[in-house]
Length: 361
Image (tube, rainbow, N blue to C red; front, side, top):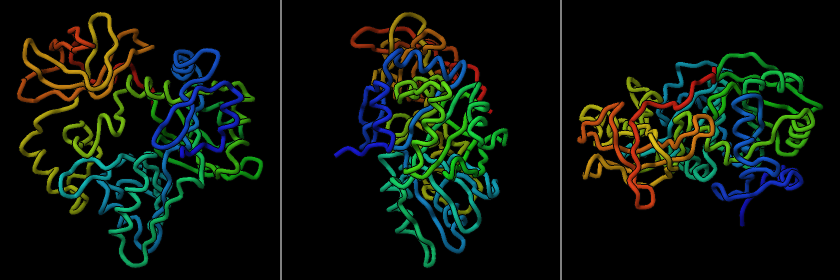
């Protein structure tokens, strides 16, 4: 049985079209404009996404932050309490990505984690199995809702609720709205300035109603996907996975290479030293067509890779994709390749994401 957001009835009233995401029934788009309108609202003004399907887990106990740091890839010691960090949970043997997630550092003895919906139970399982005595890993997946307010006008929209704004990128603070405690984090998945609001499940409607009542555009996960693809942000299960390592997926920036311990360290250091057999690249079509995931990429008559994500960019008005390209092909940015789109070879140029200008900070 599919899980539902606490705001499901609100989405239904707004004419949402639903789809399955990680075992949850979530809004794909809303009546009155759909993906294009919602995408444009985030790039030009402000939109709000219900992303309550995202996981929530809490690690507590003496030295909890140090324990998390010894498991996940990024260097948690680089940030302090009140800051958040993008990081990866990798398989210790292979270095493949179990999940990518955000770690909220509350203090040395408490870390709040936001993994992807489908991977929450596995991340919690692995952490629990490794946790020392006194450290507790709690699955709080359904206890909280998360609303992502994204766009150039996100700050005034959040400020109008009486919530704190203006803090640094990837930092968070807490405040109350009509008795509802809200964690406000300066982050997002769209490439625009934004805030993610973590609130108790039963209080989610208070925040959602205030935003919609103020004219903020409700946005579904269809627009979330086009926005993140324009930024070249990876989606786990497509651009990162147990078979796609951070080295291959160009996520090595989220690895604390000098740390003495993290899951997958030996495998990833070896791959980094040897050089990966394939690497994630951006593709921009030079002509008409819409690439999707799992389409073959050719250089002349030679197959050199496969797309992992693809879409039509509403901002750029061109087809764009992320693709794993064989490093042995010797291709560089600016080189031309062909994407096999349903049996038709379509020319594309290798580019470095993002495909649009970023204003995330």
